[in-house]
Length: 168
Image (tube, rainbow, N blue to C red):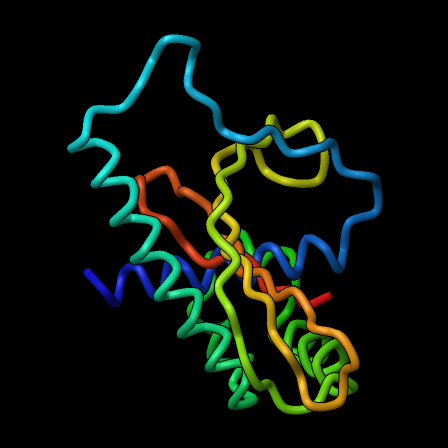
């Protein structure tokens, strides 16, 4: 199960990075996932959602650590088919290296949370549910901390898969 989550998360982060790199049109604003008015989760449902978010965040951390080790190619190799259609392995590796090179080595990395979004498919992103895992990271050559984002997509088989990585 952990391997499936890792592969899924890796695919989602790849898609997010590649989409950001190759978008040619402005994207519509993502719609945060919201529950209908008056609808609330049971304690068990909330606990399951919290556990899922923790598991996805752990996979996202593993992905950024692979990228820290210059293993972006391995991250891409585990990516979703959708992500691989958007950006080639070589382009993904070059993009990650280009974005990370001026920042230096990563230092302190703080989790900033999990955000859930739904896209309607009207832009360059496929319609569906996305989860972004955010980290506030201090790099050795940067005067300010940077925001790293690993993105996952809920595939048709109900598995979260890695779709993209970005750093700003």
